Length: 497
Ligand SMILES: O=C(O)CCC(=O)C(=O)O
Ligand SMILES: [Fe+2]
Image (tube, rainbow, N blue to C red):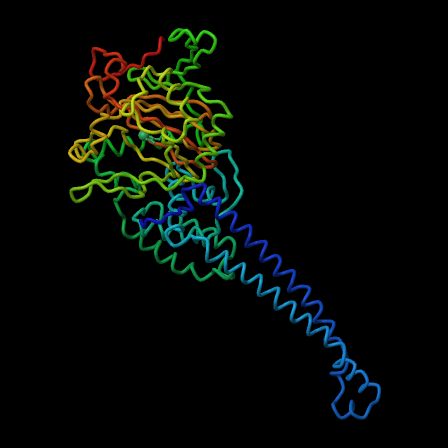
């Protein structure tokens, strides 16, 4: 991964800028084509003269033809001179603005193309789609615009092979060839890729590989330390199953409990919390209508153009590095309390709903806004940061604030397809609902990391998923932290249930 400040696959605002540039370029091309067309038409007029049909010695003998010749050169061609001049100036201007568009705007490069392919492979993998249906935009009963050509599928297959995703490589290459044969692709311009694709496919079929196609199992080394490899493999399978709910598969009828909470504060009598309990012990709670449309609009418009590709902390060669990674393919920004008084109410509302103390400077992190484009996801992880591996390398502020005791995450958008938040150890999949908030704990009452709430963000299939997250820190929650339960393995929020 090369760090560039634009990411056209995972940042909606970067891609939006590219869409705008593309529109300007199409307009530019349209003008050039129109200019060429009218120039062409004009030129043709000057070609229809019949002088050229006569031999030179005939013309010099003929008074009528010589009159025509003199008229053409003495008068008519002056207009052609002007056409040429005007056309050249017009084209020069169009070329100038085209060049400017191409040079002042950061162009997608090889990495961007790789990310775009990576996103497609991820969707195929997570949602267990056939390459054929994916190439036509069919996902379950959902139909999206667009297509992938057999040559595109072949390129994606080669990309998958290069990145050791051999199962995906086989599927993409085989379908590329199958579709191309049906369509008689060999006669088209792109026909020459077929032989190469066939060779690579044969090679893959000969060398049965045992590597897993799951990118996270290969990369999340910290997870390997915590979970045995086979249980991590099972958790990832469970995660994929939970991702499929509400998109390619029906979710099972929920056993979850919904209720109106009118009792946790006197305010709730007129404005009760609309709660859904997704899991009890440990609790995962969704609160509907936590934010209004206009509140969301304000957050979105304050942050959209600030969204930049997220980086993930890695522990490598004795120190922490932050890099964009395949584990978390989102764009994000922070809303700092200082300088954003218009968003002060958010912390207060979260505090009032959860019972956590959020008024101190060390009680929680700033609000993080993140957005996922199609293919954007977050692999399985726990939010706590006091990991054995990192413990000695935490920032002083992290030590002051304590670990992330709870996560309060607001969905700022609905998602047309995909994008669930999934908890494989608890068999919980939450579909984003605009304005709702989800709350879970990350620590046991004794402060150690709770692995139960291992979770991930399923890749978005179609749409843009937008979230705002408040990570509540432990040290300021001396009196308001979750009720202590006899078991070390559970935490409870202070809702009256
Ligand atoms: O987007 C989601 O559903 C989960 C995000 C998440 O787990 C995180 O940002 O830590
Ligand atoms: Fe998380």
